[in-house]
Length: 392
Image 1 (spheres, rainbow, N blue to C red):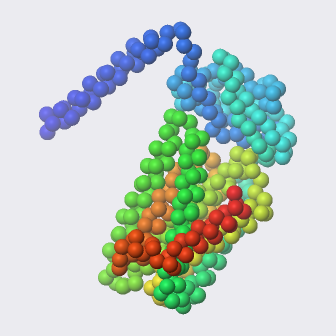
Image 2: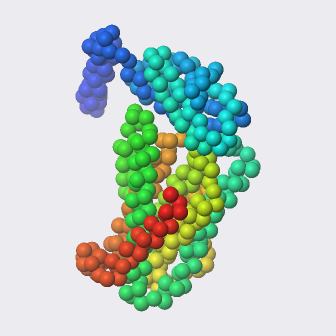
Image 3: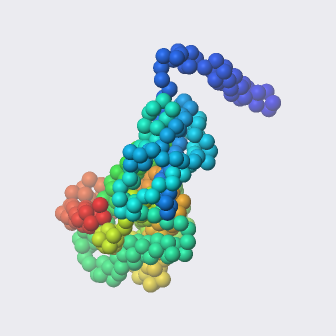
C-alpha cells in the first residue's frame, strides 16, 4: 500500500519541483528583458453610486503587476482612495472610492490611468443610486419579482382546464408550442450567457465556465428525472407527466432566477431604470411559461389539485424574486454567468424530455414533420419573439 502511494505521489512531486524551478528562474522574463512593456489588463468588477461618490471595484487580469496612478471622471482628474492599495498583482483586487458629484440620469465615464500611461475606462450610461440592503428596496425587488415572475406563471397555469379538453392533434400542437417556447428561452439564455461570459476577465475563461455549468445542470436534471420516474412508476401510471411538469417548472425557475438576477444587477450597477413598459414586457413574456409547465399533465388527461398547480407555479416563479435580491444586493459577474448557464442547461434537458415523450411511439424526425407539431413550434417561437421585443 505504501509503495503504491509513493508511486502515485512521485509524478506530483516532480511536477511541483519543475514548477518551482520555472517560477524561480523566470525564463519568460529573461526572454522579454527590458525591451518589452508589461502586459496590463485592468477590469472593472463592479461600479456603484453613493450620494456624492463613485465606488469602483477593479481587478488585475494580466500577468504583470499594475499600478493605478490617476483617476479621471468625465475627462477631469479626481482624488481617490484605494482600500487594498494601488499596486495589484495578478488577480489582485482593490476598491476605489472617488468623491464625485454625479448627476442622476446622466451618463458618466470613469477612466483609470496606470503608471505606464495605459487607460482603462468604464461607462455608466444612466446614473442612479445603487440600492442598499434595506426594507424599502427589499420590498421593491420582491414586488418586481412577483410582477414579472410569480403572477404571470400562475396565470399561465389557468390554461390547464382548457388543455385537458382538446383533441389529440390539438395536444400535439400544444406540446410543440411548449417546445417552441422553451427553445426560444434556450437560445435567448445562451446568447445572454455567452455575452456575460465575454465580459468576464480572461483569467476566468468565461465561455468554458458557461459551457461546463450548463452541461452540469443538464446531467443533474437527467439524473433527477430518472430517479423520480423510477420511484413513482410502480405507484402511479401517470407519474411520468407529473415528473415532466416538475422538471419543466424547475428549468423555468432556474431561467427566471437568471432573469431576476439581470433585473437586480441592472439596478446594482446603476445601468438601468426599470420602467413600466419593461415590466409589462416581462409579464407577457413569462405568462406563456405556465402553459409550458402544465402541457405534459394535460396530455395525460390527469386531474391535478389546485394545490399541485400552485406548487408548480411557485417552483417556476419564485426564483425570480430570489434572483432580483441576489443581483441587487450581492452582484457578482462570475455567479451571473454560472446561474445563466444553469438555466440554459435545465431548459435544454426539459426540451429533450418533451421531445422524447412526444416521439415515444415513433421517430423524432417523423414526429417533427407533422402539421400540428410544425404549427406549434412556429407559434411558440413567434409568441416568445413578439413578447420578447417588449423586454429587449
